[in-house]
Length: 182
Image (cartoon, rainbow, N blue to C red; front, top):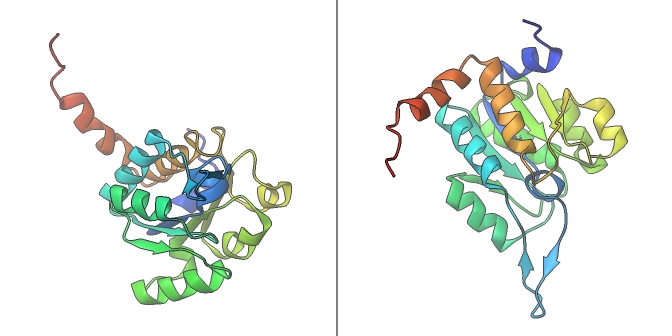
């Protein structure tokens, strides 16, 4: 089987962090008439994140914007490391890695815009989405087939799990569950 550079680099991921707008969502910002911000998240992405965490990979969200919706989604998924309103994502990750006693080579990041480049280039593994900025796509290890907020995060989670030899085990329990009777 052909193992790509992206698969080789994903083997070492111990901490995987994600941007929100344009990665976990399609990048569209919704506002109610009262000024409340709303975001749409994909359940496939959510399950991928839970599988990755279940396999022992530490998860983080590092995003430039601050949103109550992101806080609620992170809590719903059990993601304890939530860094919002971050202008310098590279420095934020550096501090996080020091706290976790990890190096950049142990970390992955998924982002979509040029502000993500310093962090994407520093991490041992990096990914983006098809709608990501062209410069970003040239500097990451992997560009998903699925779109932002449409399964791209799940695709990256499964690539990491596959690369680490854990995907089959994470999916096997689903096959052992009894089929529901109708």
